[in-house]
Every structure is written in C-alpha cells, then in structure tokens.
Amino acid sequence: MPPVPLPPLLPARPGEAQHQRAARSLREAAQTGLLVSGSRLSTRKLADHWNLARSTVQDAVEQLQAEGYVEVRARSGSYVADYSVPGRPPALTPPSVPLSDWATRALSNERPGDPDGYGAAARFEIDLRLGQSPGLFPSELWAQALARRAGDHPALLSVGELGPAETRRAIADWLTGERGAAVTPDMVMLTGGTQSALDLLSRTYLEPGRVAVIEDPGYPGARRAFGAVGATLHPVPVDAGGLDPAGLPDRATLAYVTPGCQFPTTATLAAARRQALLGWAQSRQSFIVEDDYAADFHHAARPPTPLQGLAPESVILLGTFSQSLAPALRSGYLVAPPSVLDILARTRPLTDRHPPTLDALALAEFLASGGYMRHLRRARAQVAHRHQVLLEALHTVLPGFRPRPAHSGLHLYLPLPGGLSEPQLIAHAASQGLGLSGVASFSRQAQPPALLLAFAHLGPETLREGARRLAEVLKTLEVKAG
Image 1 (cartoon, rainbow, N blue to C red):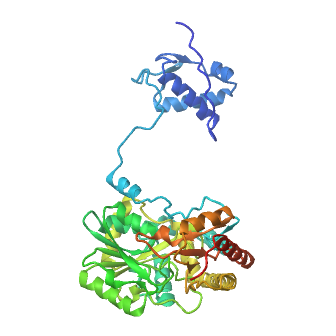
Image 2 (cartoon, rainbow, N blue to C red):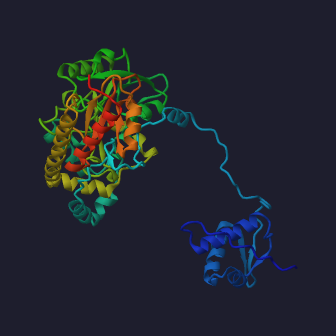
C-alpha cells in the first residue's frame, strides 16, 4: 500500500482551539478525497508534520471518531472510515433557501434608515440621538441582590412560563401602589422586554386579514412586529393631545398606544381621548396594548394612571426595567386578564420557554426591599436636572423655537420651522460631530419637521454644548424660526 499522504494543516480561524483546527484539517482531507477510506492515521507523524503536540492530534482523531470519519481497529490503529460521501467538496456558500412569508414581511417593513436601533453603531462627539441608556445602573446593589439569590437553588430550579411567582407578586405590588394599575400576580408575565412581548402578542392574536392600530408617528418596533405576521396596519394621527380617536377604524384586533408619554412626540393623551379610546375598544371587542415605557422617569407631576387601571379587562399593559436599570437585563413584564395570560403561557414555550430566572429573582428582591425605589429617586433627580438643563439651553441659544417639555421619558421634542429639511439638518449636524434624531424616521405619513433630543445620558456641560452646536448648525443652514 502506498504511503498515506499527510494533509496540510489549514489556517487557524479566530479563537479556534488547536485540536479543532487539526480535526477540521483531517475532515476536509477526507471529504475532498486526499485521505481515502481505509487510510491509516499516524498521530505521531501528523503531530510532527504539523508541529503540534501528539495529544492534540489524538484529541482531533477522537473527535472525528465520534463524528464517524475515523474508525479504531483493535490492536491496529485508527483509519479513515467509509462514510459514504466520497469526494464531496466542502460547501463554500450557504444554500439558497427561500425565506418564509414571515421573514419576507419582516424585512419588507424594515425601511431604509429604520430607527429600531437608532444608529447606535455610529459615533459622535455629542450624541443626542434616541436609544441612549441613562447610565445610572446601581451596579453594586444589583450585584449584591444577584449574589444573595444565586444560592437559592429551589427557586432557580422552579421555572415556569410566566416567571417566578415572587417576582410577579413584587411587580403587581409595584404597579398597584406606584402606578395605580389594577394588577394581581396572576395577571403578570415576565418578558425579555417590550419587543418580545409585542412579538408574542402578534403571533398569538394577529394574522393576514386582521387589523392592528399603530400611532403615527410611533414606535417602529410595534409596526414591524405587527406587519411581520401579515396584519393590516392602520396608522392613527398623533397631535399635541396624543392619539386622535377620530382616526380609529371601525374594527381592529389590537391597538398599540403610548398614552402616558407618546413615542416619539412626548404628548400625554388627553382625558377625553382616553375615555374615547377605552369606549372604542370595549364596543369593538378589541384589545388596547398600552406601552408604559416612560412612567418610571417622570420629571414634574406624577404620570397619569395607566389605561389598564381604568379598564383591566380591555387593556394589555407592557412595561420594562431596561431604561431605569440597564438594557442588558432585558427585564420586562406584560399584564393581562388571566384568561389571556393562560393562552400566552401555552404559546410562549415555542420560542423562549421562560424568562431568565436569576435576574427575575434579583429584581423581586430589589423591588420588595425598597432598593428600586431608592435608586429611582436618585435617578429621577439626575434625569430631571438634565432635562431642565437642555430645556434652558435651547431657550437661550434658540429663542425663537418652542421645545416641548417632556413630562416623562428621556428625550425632548423640538418642532422645527416648516421650510427645513430634516435629513439635510441631521446630515449637516453629523458632519459637525453632533448626532440627532428626527421625527420623520418614525412616521408613515408626512409630519411637520421636528428633532428628538435625548438628554438623560449626558452631563450638563455636554448638553449645553450640544444645544450650542445645534444653534450653529441651524445658523449655517440659515434657518429662522417662523
């Protein structure tokens, strides 16, 4: 028998272990026919040829034995097995598999410049774009809560689709006492955040032929989740009083709204409109999906009671701790009537089974101990101060403009003169190291131009400098307030 050729050692991939590299080299040699079936493998010769430790090559051979490429013969050695695909070349490109209808719709709803991620990859000297974390995470307190709960083995092993019972109880107590919601623990499901809740609701209640109401301008995550399942989207205009109920359709399955702090205009839904919206939902047998994303950061008066507190049978309430704690925690909740939660608990396991249990237990302790409230008091004071600094700076450098004070949330809404091109302004600001977001990116219909200025993540001096640079950009474009 002619000597067995020694295959080359393929170039290493980033982070690849040496035994994996050796196994990949032998596997490709067998697949391409360089090593034929029945060839004897000498780990000593291969180790010398590749300048690797013999134990490393032995680990590679054992891995290939488990995969079926190598067979070990008693008192004889290791040989290339006959695995019935001789000469198969390695695949160089993924197969061209058609996308599902869901993926096609999801991608078709991804418009150029879609702000779901708010362009976080770009870097600016001063970044006033949306999507910035306040950076006020109580890391030491959270680490202590995690450490205490990490040893709670019974709780860690008792997982369920809705999340730990004590966390659901703590969230129910928080929402009832702090927000005025009508919540009991059996109405709470823990989620990975608002977007995961919207995805679950979309797949459970929407399909082609059903109608979903969205605000315009509004949160693009709701538009994309509803559109991906084939629902017909019905945008309803928003003005200074929030969503206009006159634009509601005759029928709809779900209506997504942000009444406490409309995203992105920051408007609060007027009292008469709140009642009109609830009346519409009850008469049409529709669910209102209420996103209470900004309630924990209110700057002046307390935020209004959620719609859920007024009509718990018609409203599904969504909330998150991602803004008030940290986005990486992915800790959110969904509040719904128990009958709805029963359905969601039975459909959820098809995707993520249950929320992260250890983080959920730490959150329960943080809420029940009062640690979260103490953290919020400090964080609210800082965020409210930064809000006021930016508001005053804008009034100083842009006296003809009328920024809308935010009662809640982490950004300001700044209307612009009608003759201004939002894209031109944002592009010119970017060239000057200033990152800006505009309302047009969140709109389906044409909107009066406006900027959305995030403030919670920046210090006072940076905010003042950002306002000054914005004024310079506007001056350069020779824009005058009307």
